Image (tube, rainbow, N blue to C red; front, side):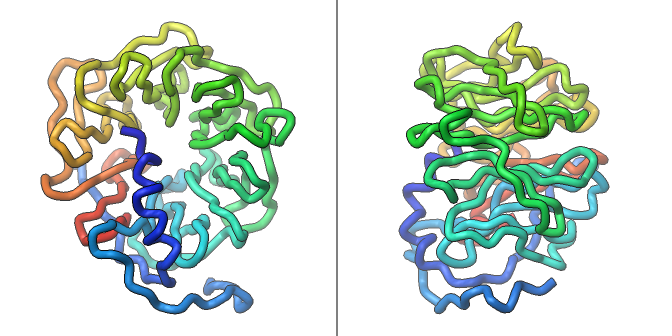
Length: 306
């Protein structure tokens, strides 16, 4: 299942949310104040039956001390940064649009994200202090008024950014240079290919695809060659993320009704096993640089939090 498929379900609730404090950071262990001009939002109650997206899609800083994430604390989604213990939350983007899916560069100097601020989804970069905001993809070039560029992911060497776009008619995986030049298409299937993630050595790209009728995890070389399914079946699997040492793979799956996180050896030598508990939904994991912690978002508190 594509995580973005849940957004229409909760959008009505999101639009009524007030500014809310961060509940904390959920971790699975494997071993300045806002600007004064920001408008205040009136408190409101979201429907109990609809989980509220508040704080989602985390990405670690290279030193493991901070997380960047997207949060909806008013009318629109914006990019925020906080310490790894959940303190020191600060907002980076201030736009009358949605800024989502942040990814921290390996050198720690830049955060890439997608935004619909100009009428269609494009990629942007910003410094961790909220300065030097820059657009990477452009209408009429990579993206037109009817297409998008979303879900960016830095390569381990910081020289490339993988993302997905439907500019050629259906959702495919692309790569661009870190400066926005040199766009290259990696997948050419008739299904939806998206949510790319790099292997730690930068040689492979993991992505989700429904080219065979269900959501499966696939892998390919960084140039788009040697595309193969990691495993296939009737379950919807997506959001693959390798551990920093490349030995294990975490992903979310609907194989037990509600989506939750699973982990398995990257070589497929053992079947997936649950990583998060039953009874709640968990999505979009991100390994800490040392491989000892896993950030993700879940509705176990009744609303989606990190």
